[in-house]
Length: 258
Image 1 (cartoon, one colour):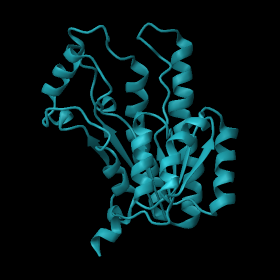
Image 2: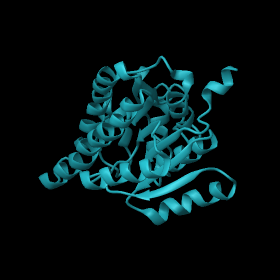
Image 3: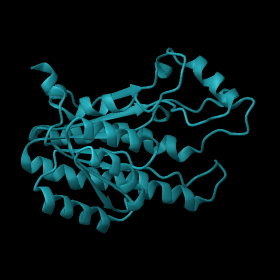
C-alpha cells in the first residue's frame, strides 16, 4: 500500500536539537510516524520534558545529551545509539546555535557558530553516514533555511527594532545545501540518500509590523506553524522518497519563489 511507504515504523532515527522551535514538532512528527526516535541536544532535561507525553502514549523516544561542537561527544552519541539499537536508519541534522547577534559582533562569535553549525553538521553527517553506508541503506535530512537561498530582506523589519539577522546563519545554511549534494553524491553508491529542507519563517510571537511585512511576501499569506515542517521531513526519511536524493526542498509558503 502506498501509505505504508510513508511510515517510519521501526526505523531508528536520530534527531539533533529536539527541544527547539523546529525540534519539538519534528520530535512529535517522527515519533508519530512510528520511528524509534533518538533526540539529542545539550539540554537533556528539556528533551525529557518534551518526550514524556509521547512516551506515556506508547511512542518510542529516547533522550541523549550531546554537544555538536565536540567530536568526542558526537562519537559517544554514535556508540550509544549503536549499543542500544545496532543500527541507524535516519539522521536529521536540526541542531543549531545562534552565537552571532549582529554583523559587528566579535569574531569569536562567528568562529563559534561555524564550529557548531558547520563543522558539527559535517561530523554528524560523516559519523552516522558511515554507519548507513555499511548497512547499505539510510536517509539523512539536513534542516537548512530559506536564508541559505536568499539574502536578507531589510524591508521586513521596517517598524520594528529587530534589525537584519547576522551573516553567519546565511553562510552555514547556504553551505548546508551544497554539503547535502556532496554527501548525496558520495553516499549514493551505498544506497544512502541525503537531502535538505529549507524552512521559511516560523511564527514565534514576532511583532505585528514584521508579521504583516513577512506575510505579504509569501504566496500563502502567513508564517509557518508547528504543523508545517514535519511532513516534509517524514517524507524524506521514508521509503516514499526512495528515489529522491540531493534535493533542497523549500518549506516556505512560496516565499523564495516570488
